[in-house]
Amino acid sequence: MSEFSKEVIVVAGGLGKRMHAGIPKQFLVAAGKPLLMHTLQRFYDYSAEIKIILVLPDPFKAYWESLCRKFSFEVPCIFASGGETRYFSVKSGLKHTGDESLVAVHDGVRPLVSADTIQRVFKIAAAEGNAVPVVNVNQTMRKISGSDSHTVNRDEYRLVQTPQCFRADILKKAYRIEYEDRFTDDAIVVEASGVKICLVQGNPENIKITHPSELKIADALLKQ
Amino acid sequence: MSEFSKEVIVVAGGLGKRMHAGIPKQFLVAAGKPLLMHTLQRFYDYSAEIKIILVLPDPFKAYWESLCRKFSFEVPCIFASGGETRYFSVKSGLKHTGDESLVAVHDGVRPLVSADTIQRVFKIAAAEGNAVPVVNVNQTMRKISGSDSHTVNRDEYRLVQTPQCFRADILKKAYRIEYEDRFTDDAIVVEASGVKICLVQGNPENIKITHPSELKIADALLKQ
Figure 1 (cartoon, rainbow over the protein chains, first blue to last red):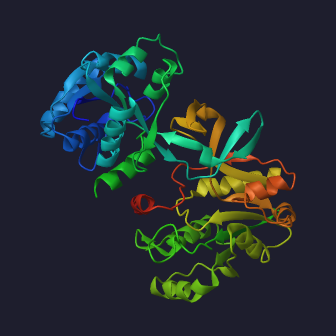
Figure 2 (cartoon, chains in turn orange, brown):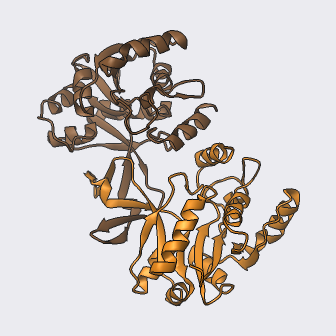
Figure 3 (cartoon, each protein chain N blue to C red):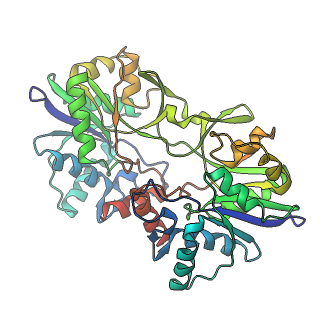
């Protein structure tokens, strides 16, 4: 792993329409500070050497800086401007990455990523070119077909998390593909460029905070 | 709905091998009392008229009774003996149900079911014969095929919860089918008897407490 420097693009481009909370969800407070600060701290704690690129919507940069002062938050970040969709936000962050690095892309609203998961995606991406963390589906699942539905074998499915990690050259090449609506995560974009995706174990608590009940869960788990 | 009496079979037959906690997970304490007490309380709070059939492994009946004394827990329950698998536990509980009732079957380790979800499954089952609560998949999902995997359209999938509710005659007829390993929930058994399953909205917090991190989540959400 020593030949690659490590970088992470933390995507916090969302304008928070789903949470109905007035402010975008990455700024909501859980366990004493905004979710996004917890997220950034996890990467900084993993390695103080990691280069953190924070993609924020331009209208919220000043607000974020005021939050950093208020919470005395000092994890060093490079800023990039959020785009209209996740794809364009990542592309914006990629302008700040090196060529010989491993680039992880992480959701700003996943503050519960473990050090083990971060370690694993960098390690496997160094060897395989990419690493995408997943967890098993631990509930019965049905597939809808028209007005009908049937139980599927949940062992054949995985729920996808972030950080998704790639060799910089692979990720940059993939992000030259023209945007499609189906590009909702990086694995899909990289796959579209002809690369086989390598799945690795994520951590079950590493949920995306999208709904109010998940904010309560994050608050409880972050307090431990 | 007035013509049907309401009954619920709460399945707490598990011997707790997965949780590694020494005691079965339905007895683990969250927010001040055992998970199973929270679960039973939700149904009693929904309606003090509901007939609650509690399926417990025989070796744990005395232990449960001691817990009820310790926590001054007084929700009235009829006991049934747990079987070797969930199928046989439900079948055991069915011996105590009426013929003209609506029977909900619920996991003892889902203490976060909402009154709305309970109300909804009884209401729809009264009209349609059955009602199975589900929630959307809110993460990217991949399907494994051999050593490869691909992203699937998560909008086509639903995660299945309990209480799954049925007209008693429909459920009893289904449980006359001989046991198969794939009978991991009641919808599958009823479906195997030729009945079309009716999906209704569950509530996102209504998770099954299977792993230690989920016990922490339950603790946080139950404390509110």
